[in-house]
Length: 455
Ligand SMILES: [Cu+2]
Image (cartoon, rainbow, N blue to C red):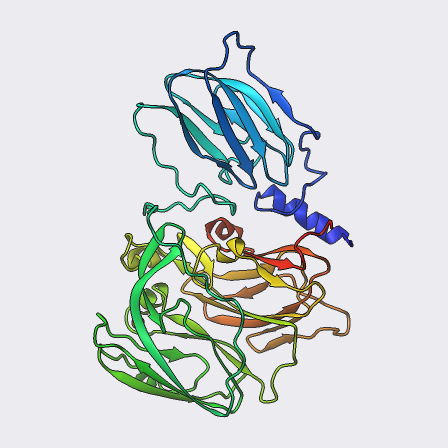
């Protein structure tokens, strides 16, 4: 298998910020291979129980555990990650295990319990923290996001609901272009609960019952007739604004009340990846609460065939109380601090469910940043984009000089067509390279071939 210097360097860079599930780094000064146990001091007593802790990239399982009473405990530490981790207790006891290894030691738990971290630089900050408490002791502060491989758990003022339903996976595949030249599309608004991240349900407002709304794909020269319907049982007025259209704002984009419908007719004059959204005041709230989607307009002659096509919409969630719409005050901050930044509506869904592609096959992405307010620096780790059309500006594959692109900057309401191919089987993380958001849901994976570069 080919491993070039670019990919090795990229892997090390990413491991240092603690997101990667990929491979170990030889240059980071990690401890030598093998398991090392460094108990703080020899213990004369026999252990009265066993504590089992699993370390992974990047986190501990469990993050909270309880023992019956104070005393000496055996610790069994397993590292299922791809890089070295340790469990370092607040009394100084430290057990280190290389990737895939385990180690045993002992620790003395006092009446106040102990906290533990991984002491490898950056790992604690990325979420490798935990706590041992004594049964019957005052309840510890809840630590949420125990299963967050993506980085620091989001700082949010909304508590996770362990009873929240699982999220519904949003398909990443781009639809084919609609047949014919005049397209009548019924688009029904739905106000509904949606799990936007594990443990968090918001009452979102949608076009067609999903966030983002459906991808509408046509060709230059086509006529699109959208029949927008606001059901009688909706609570609010809504509207729609197609950036792919040239119409007067106070004509097609006016709001319709519950029970009303409206025809928005437009001609696809220009090719590209376009945003549509609700523009009803306050538009910030309607966009932040889920009312956006993508239009793909292909050139009149169509796009060349490729092996895979996916549509990815980046957007932000500013969590309101569980089961309520998103928090407009949070979304309105001059320096927006979203609880989650996501691809296709749900935090980390393509990390949990990697998107499968063929190695060496041509992949085309339609990418839109719906915002409402945060820029995207769209990047796929381990790849180089050789064809990009961003807002009408084009980088051609096989251009004179052989230039390529590493990240596509998309301000809110900007879109791009991006193409690349993978060099070898493996995992290729999808991120915004504004990296504070990678730990807040903006992390997916392409799984190329069997996902294993070493086989
Ligand atoms: Cu709306």
